[in-house]
Amino acid sequence: MRIRRAAVPAVMATALAVPILAASAASATPVTKSTVASRPCDRPGPWGIHATAVNLRSKPTTSSKAVGVLYKSHKFKVHSTSGNWVNLTDTTTGIRGWASQTYVYRDVYMCLD
Image 1 (cartoon, helix red, strand yellow):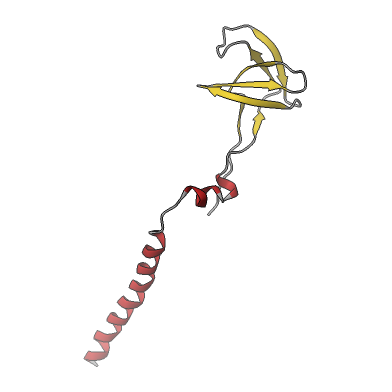
Image 2 (image 1 turned 90 degrees about the horizontal axis):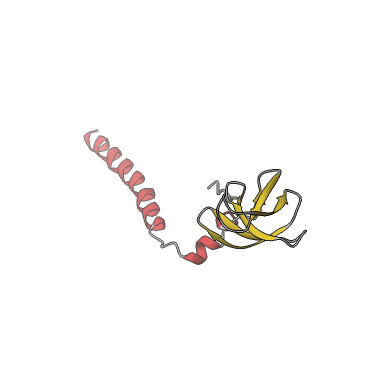
């Protein structure tokens, strides 16, 4: 009876240790850029306008001259970013200018794993 009582905890400890060792070996695999980029939720999302209309400015400041308006229904192409500003061209009207990233920004994909 004493041997059986000692054997049960030893078997239980071994049964619990095997998945832990297997999990730590699996998580030791290095994550490379190609592994991360292969998941669709890790890529950057599309640019979008999250307001009805956004002023396009000649320079990336609020005090610069407004050169046009980018409406939510318009298509646009992003050229660069600078701080909290996006340099873009409204492909509907052909106007190029700067817009605040408060209103024009990339959507974010979320991984649920």
